[in-house]
Image (cartoon, rainbow, N blue to C red; front, side, top):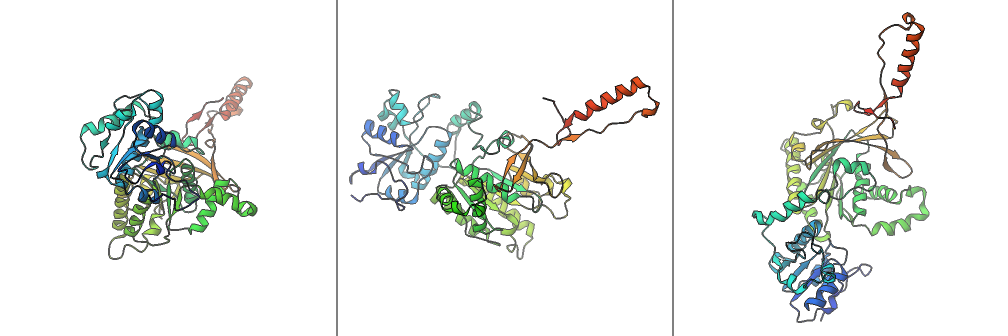
Length: 449
């Protein structure tokens, strides 16, 4: 029997793989070690658990599973587990994979094999109900029924992965959801790369495997900035801590495209597809679209070339069930005060294809560190709005701040010289009260606390 050994000895391996003898033709693949123990104990079928959590199947683990004729993919029976099971089945081959659903048709049934065992369920019976993976291009309503019910009855669980550092952002954006395309735009120098590097790092710390395509800034400079954001201190000013934070940063599922400047979109797409397959990438960042396409429009209109690239990314996000964030420039002739969804460089197709459109703008004068993140399109539930953030040079990151206050102007009805003493006192009291009332950036009055 050839034993399975991870390529990187510092990484965990397939727990329980030693149980599968040379004559074993079937294997159960679970999310956690305890599930593998429960499944093997009750069914007698060799069971292993994923080495890096419930949503990642590394290449060396895939090679170890090649000798089995049938693989039962038995992950947590929830929305994320179901999507991960389909992805893993496609990677291993849908013809030899079967999906095990612990809950079956019981909405509040056990989520995993270990919980089912603890509640007295027969795991052998559950295993016998395993179903093959349906063709991903043909569906009937029976395949959608449970998903529709889940979405209606669990709105909070389908919101996506939420930001831990920008809670106000969650109220509008509703989390990072797979299968969507987001366009992030804003004036030059307003901090688009800084914002999206911080957000992608935030999601990555929650287990979202991320691929960064930085076509404008070299990867070394980007990684330096992200390490400072990760450590919440400027690494360049804390050189003695670089090795410590480097080891911590290496544990994140963060990957970088080795491209810079103008690059053929087909080449980028091929590399993205490999990253999704090999590293279970769930979030891809393209920064930025104009730099990637700068020399790719020879012989055709540059808008047509950009539209084709956006359409390709849109389709890729749907087919591979990943979230793609594309950074795009504004039109050069667009005044910053009048920026809206129509201000983004290119044709209308750019924003039409996108599920979400976000515009970043500077608040106040040129020295201000405050920015406004304005969600101007949200296909998920239509929620639009603004979040205000402020840049901290020490951490090289943004934090949420309250909306800037404005003072309401006072309308002069009569000259104070014509008022009686009593009327003048009343007018002064009303003016003082009005001056204490503040409004937000949209002109709405902020109630006093």
